[in-house]
Amino acid sequence: MPGSDEGHLLVLVLNSLTPIAVVGFFSVSYSTQRLHAIVAIVLVIIFWIIITIGQLVTMGIPQTLAEPAAGTIMALLPIVLLIVAPAKAVSRRLIFLALGLLLLIALNELSKLGLDVTAPKLG
Amino acid sequence: MADIFISYSKADHALALKLSAFLEAEEWTVWWDKSLGAGELYRDEIMKELATARAVITIWTENSVKSDFVRAEAGRAKADGKLIPVKTPNVDYADIPLPFGEMHTENFASTDLIRAAVVAQLAKPAVEPSAWALLTKGFRYELLTWVGIVGGALTLFGNLDAVLKLADWARLLVQNWKEWTHAFWLWAFSWLGIHVSPDWTPVLSFLLFGSLLIIGQAVKFKSTIKERLTIRDVDGKSVYLLRWPALAVLVMLLCAM
Image 1 (cartoon, rainbow over the protein chains, first blue to last red):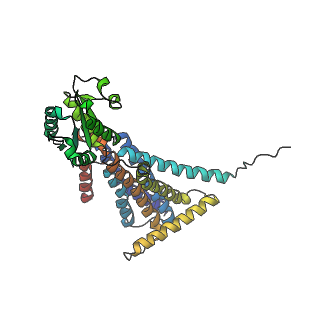
Image 2 (image 1 turned 180 degrees about the vertical axis):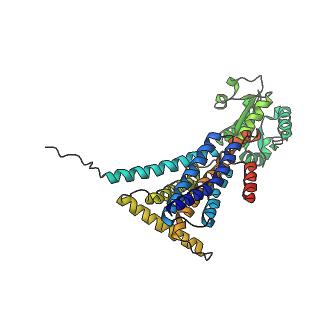
Image 3 (image 1 turned 90 degrees about the vertical axis):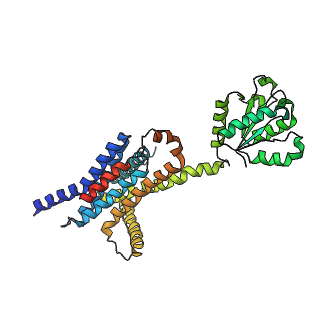
């Protein structure tokens, strides 16, 4: 049943993101550099969505919650690691990572256009 | 080896005694030639202490500006970059022999300024790192971070192949990247006797590169820039993203779940 699969996917995504969002909320609440904290948490969540959505597409939707739960607990690792790093520096580096990803996507799209950039011969 | 070496003229023994008492009260170790006889007898010891001290305070007085020994000691200290000149009020800058007269010199009575100059001098590293060491120091920490950034970007891009139509070069890049990372995880987990499915490779790789990125910044923070943030720490403000109270709440939540 497609409808049931979509519902199950939604539950999986919510189940995966809720603990990260909870941790993110507390991180932002306690941080003195809230803007950087928000940027870092939002980027980590976006990256995690990219990873989990890609996995769900390739692996199919798991019928138990064991695998998503394991993935979610592992996703908390980078966030917990943030306790030892300054928020400002980490958010900047995560922005670099996002820019790198966007650069790769842009280069890929440019390649698919098949542009001819050779100069026309004179005469 | 003393923290501070005091260079003075024998005729100004009382001044050296007063300065030494002040510096020792600040809990620094001080060496000065306490003998009232000719310094020539103790020259080797004086030169040894002068070479090993981390700061040298030269007291310029009407007597010391004429002393060859004091000039020589000040010259050696200046060459080593650890000279802190001090003068009595009756000595003008013009009276101090060149090139020492060109240097900023504190008044003998300005103990706060002398203390600040000593603190600044002692804060310098005992051995000045080479230009190459300074250049590579920052790079070493950033290297770990950049491995995390590049690896993380490639892993995320590789995971988008399900929703993106890839160009030939991108498909080749993604395919090889997945093979290399999977081979690494197979090898890594084989030590534990665990077989890792290729489906888990992107998740594990992303966690690895994300951790490298953060650890690189944490190590850099701990080793290079924390000193500058000490005051903020004293004020009770944290520059960390996640503070210990938040972690405690998180652990409680996870336990409750």
